[in-house]
Length: 433
Image 1 (cartoon, one colour):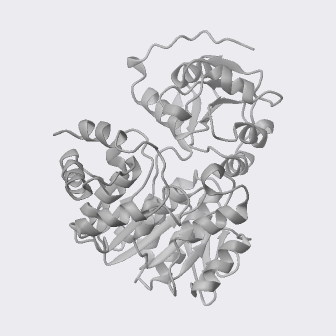
Image 2 (spheres, helix red, strand yellow):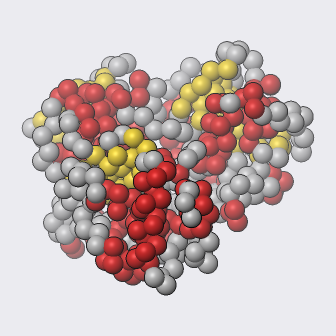
């Protein structure tokens, strides 16, 4: 195997299950690879929602301060290379191939999942990059996630909500316990929930991890239309609103958590670096805006009820516009809960199938059946996301808004379509229920 596509095809076939929780296998391979700490400082980011944005704030602020930073995130939207960034640049194919070759040479007969291969590859690349800071996003849960083989100097749990119950448990207390597993003894744990689950606080107390709680130990406060204030006891700073002021309110919490973790590590942070990092941090597919013939197209990866509520909070702060939704969801997601959260904000629904999501994908008729009794049940049905988006744009008038969300797969398909619309000619004739 000489190309990255060859390797990605290979690693998809090396474990009988897409998800296999546990650290024994990946830890054994890491030991054979001689992987130590991937950087002089490490921050691990877990949580139900907001992980990718929090990583982006950490990375941007630290780089603005002059630190050499590596960031590992998942999943990717358009290219696998997005998962591994060094100094703000996606890893080249050749570097990833070299990393996978190193993993395979050490693996022997140990089966690894796709995510475990990717994690070990990233850590191998980071180890060779002389990094001041590595920021690692947890893939699923925390305690048994491959990223957790690294002992972090600080950990962040952005939020705890219901998602991935089949692997993490049926309530927020069980899920919180799994996510709290990324904390380390006597190392700071930053919590983005104002009222985190008791399981998280109990675990932090049991291991002596000092908890920094949003809304108790540090705060994010709006100042005016262009600024917000980060505050803790004895210190405060005014900063520009994230992402050009277009960000959802929840992004203040994500930025605040990033700043809290960096301060917990006692890193030197100049005001200019904080201002630049917060203003310049970007992450694709998080309320990303495009314009087509007078219509706003907003793309967001929101895929569970908690993330949908964050979308609602943003929509309530925007001028009221006719809003058309392009929506789909993986088969194991609470699609009805997502629709229920947004029902009052959406004027029309375009549902689509997800064919490229493997076993978790869904046909549009199956999705509509799951949405029976919801506001979206009578929406137009389309075979795929690009057809749904094209139909929504054909229906929209100048001044309307199209909101595409529900899955990373939805966001990826929309971004591809918007970046090269001339290359796609979908069937524009929707089918109503």
